[in-house]
Length: 336
Image (tube, rainbow, N blue to C red):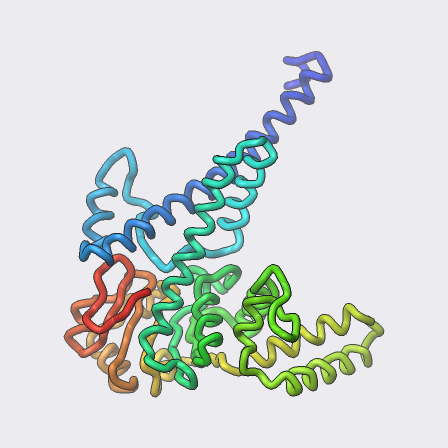
């Protein structure tokens, strides 16, 4: 049909390229604008926390505006998943290639602010423990959103690594994410932890922070053992040695991360619960269930809700110190 309308071969291919570019750009733009909307909401939520406003009331009023609509106005601890960050940065790159520096910087800022949001929540989790070293945090949810086992670029990963850096342990409960997916995501984070060499052992910057107190001799022993195992299967040379080192690093780091089969098991003896995924089981918990959680925790007991799904007044009446994104925190809850 296009060839009949445009007999010229040059015109045909020009139109084909235009249609392809428009379709590709539309896909990037859809995800980038969704990410921008979520980041804007999270920026407003931070302001609400600072000035004592309630983000729920703000979003109800904003969503009533027909020009904006009520969808995707829920504040949280930051967006994740495999698509949004990739497409936002791809759009920024497209702007750079087109010579649009200001536009590229704008879209990069959307991604950068999201990362700041995630790290801010992770630091708040650690900060509630006066001395986090040796203590355990219960992390409810590792999937980047509910009803999936997908943990790619999950905000929960920032919480885990921040806890490990500060010497705390993490006990994770998630309805669907298996341990192998949790380990795969943590390894990916560790490998991307820094852009340059850092520390006396040449670790990436982020990895060096996590491994600050690790016995390097023990790490090398693990790497040697893994390399020998791989060499027995196939000759892999330096590539095999690199894989062995990564395996040893992961094995060392995840010693501080455990999986709980049940919500109550996850909170035994902990002082802080961090909610990172909006699982329906957590959203539907009643007073009796929350009291059972409170009875198993150390005092003072903290709940940090990164998804806005708990009844803050109910939890405070039980005795919890509560922080929910978009609302002023309870007394004695310290934010960064």
